[in-house]
Length: 101
Image 1 (spheres, rainbow, N blue to C red):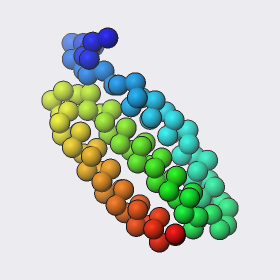
Image 2 (image 1 turned 135 degrees about the vertical axis):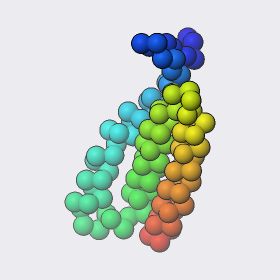
Image 3 (image 1 turned 120 degrees about the vertical axis):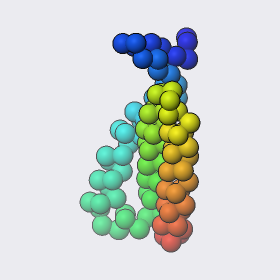
Image 4 (image 1 turned 30 degrees about the vertical axis):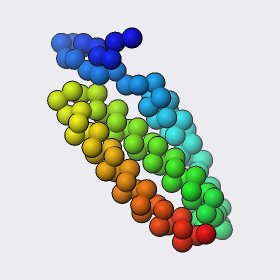
């Protein structure tokens, strides 16, 4: 399979399957995890749930920003944004999770 495709005269990079899969899987997991985190008293401070929620949020956000990198003129910018966003969320999320341990 070619790493690029031309659609309506624009050349786009093809999204890797692992990024596509992570986007879909994390999107499906986010709803039930957030619902459990918000609706069940006592689970908001559960370190295991918070860690799982953090990992799913990181995966979903990173894969979403990386999918925007399919536009070649800004591919490097979007990749840098994905890494920066991931680093900030990981740092802040780790602080929240460590507070619950």
